[in-house]
Image (cartoon, rainbow, N blue to C red):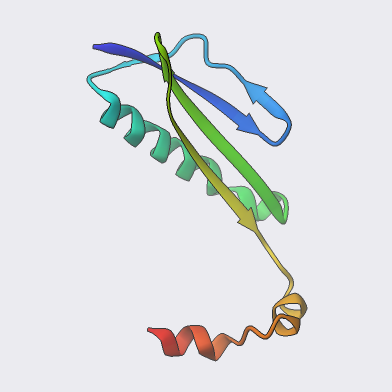
Length: 93
């Protein structure tokens, strides 16, 4: 098994993973990064209206992938000014 490292870029903060985790292949590392990103995103709406985070996955030879997500919470007055209407979303289903 290979060792994969999951570095986190959280705004201007960078957290380097020096420990890593052993996984059977790069697809498992991708799944791990995706699950971690989803878990971190679950609390964003409660804490701040704008948020961006990235997980940079690397092995002993260098970077292999990056998973990132952004969250933006806008007040409804901003949406109305931009021409968005709730019924447009409901009618799209």
